[in-house]
Length: 504
Image (cartoon, rainbow, N blue to C red; front, side, top):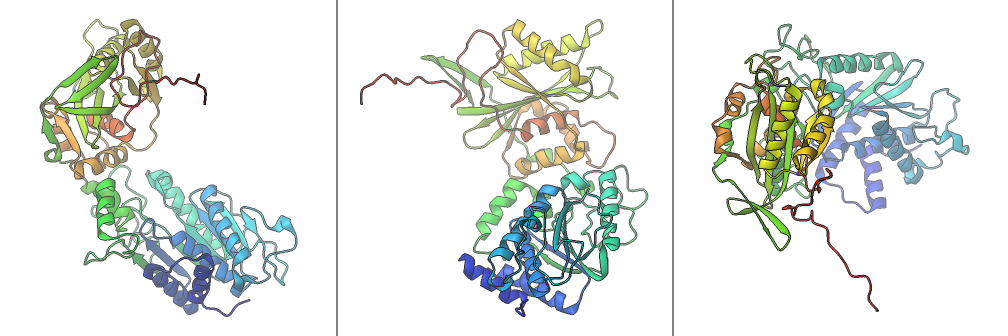
């Protein structure tokens, strides 16, 4: 046992590891020590991504065991892998921290990856620390402290059903904890209906619309009454919380890369209201140039308005291709990248099928023309629904037409609104997304103006196809279709030959 406070426990560990203690870690340590001394039973720690909060919570768990070896701790995370990672952190601290003394047991079977039991006087059925994913069965488990570390992530909260399941499983902690037990939640918000929210988002309630609740219809915040410590990456005056690692310049760079929505939720800890999200077409930077393809000495180069292009992404979101305005559109789009990181939204086409044409074959032929006309070497095909049957036919069509492009099947399971927002938000806000004048004169601009991520119906097929292009890395891989060879314009995609027959 140790009589050290948590702040001293943390300082001794920092000296042992040779790490400095930034002010933000001291602030969190003091808060945890005070709240523990006060006997608070419900705590919430929110700190920006990269703040080291999970490591500090691991040290906190080790400190609790050093103070009282009979303490039982349950660690819950979004999945078992994350929970086990926390358990390994705590176990390593217990093994090496001077204050933990002789806590390590004699029997190795009590020192597993997802659970361990320290040396303690009382014989208890439950281990000293047990790590579980949020979906695990906790029936029969008992604990004195429950640590919910990153239980809210996109995979557990991006639909109403998942949010309901998350809340239901977290309510089980009431039956696991001993009387007077403590719950410590650690994380960042990933939805406007976050379990960490202090109030319902505007417009929430029973009529909040598809995909809203639970969380939208809650009369009270899920963690009402919790003692909270909230540390955004910068305060209200713009001062960084951790200036040594996150100075103002780095914070500004993160803001540009992440985009307003993700930066607000993950770095400023503000539950993002998707209903307020907009895609402003005025942020698109127009251009009028056409592709300039050239070959010289067996080398191919593709330029756009004098800039050499280094990569491309193409995405086809197929449908039946009906001209009916109420039907889903079959849309193919391509985004080209230059060496300076600019993304050029060069073409977006809605494919339609004429009366009497076979829909699948006609669209595959149109895609082949699109790929050839824009010098593209690969296309991602969304294989949900009708797209499940198209990749094979498209490969045969490309081979017959002599188009050297590969076909890659993609399955999307995330809500479309979130996919579109995450893909568009950062490049649009950073001013790094250019659009050809033909694109700006087409249907995409109206889709941007009309788009609302929480709306169940509406035209967003063009936005979804472009989001697919923006979500994948620009393609730099050579063709896989067996067609006559042709020089590749992408730097780094050409094979080389080395002479190995030399004498040293």
